[in-house]
Every structure is written in structure tokens, then in C-alpha cells.
Amino acid sequence: MRSMSAAVAFALLAAGAITTARADEVSLEPNTDHIHVGSGVICDTQDEVTNFVRLMSDTDPTGAMQRVNREASAPMACGMATVAFRAGKSLGEVHTDKGTYNIMEIEIVAGSVNGSWQMVPRRTQYTAIPVAGYDI
Image 1 (cartoon, rainbow, N blue to C red):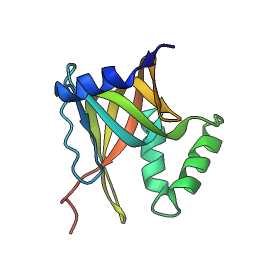
Image 2: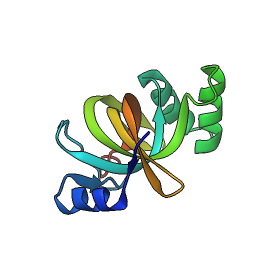
Image 3: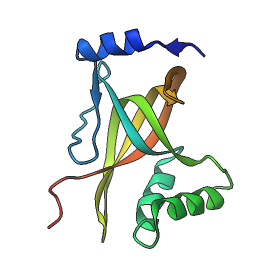
């Protein structure tokens, strides 16, 4: 894997090609040219991330993630990560007693490992973005 140097990341940020995704203000429209940066749970499948969101109603995020991974028989089916990604399709919303979440397909282009960005081959993953202002 190639490293994304800090200078390259800064140049992309300065050029407006990267935005920082915050859970409380995320509105991601599919755009193949725009790279977002965010931290959160990513899963291998839409069903896994949907299951994760539903399980968070009964337990904490760590417990929910462990259960999804155990049920998938894959210790890394879902995990926490800081990634650079392109937004893909919105796959619907999941409503729980802890909030409403937009399930999204994303294309990972780089990941942060110990503070250093690593480019990765294109990889489709799935995430849940809290929908701000939806619940009362």
C-alpha cells in the first residue's frame, strides 16, 4: 500500500476535495468526485450495519459490534475506523429508540492507521449515519 502523505491530504483538503464528516451534521449526496473523511462503524454488508444499529438499542456499540461479528462468523465484519471515502447510495433509514440512522454504501479510498493515511484498493463498505433533527 502507498501512504497518503500529509502534504497530499492537506492539498486535497485545501482544494475542497475532502470534507470532514461529523455525525451531527452529515448530509452526504452520492458524488464520485468528492472525498469525505469520517470516523465510525463500517461493515462488510448492508445487513450487518442494519443489525448493528438495531442491536445498539439493547446494548452499547461495542457489544452490538461483537454480536454482529459473532453472528457473521467474521471477527472483522464490522469495525470502527477513520476513513476517506466517497458516498454511495442511500439504502434507507432505520428507526430505533436511540435515533434514526441512514444506511449508506460508501467506497473506501484510504484509512488512517496510527495517524498515518494508507491508500487502499477501492472497497465498498456500509455505514450508518445519524439523521440529525429527525427525532423529537
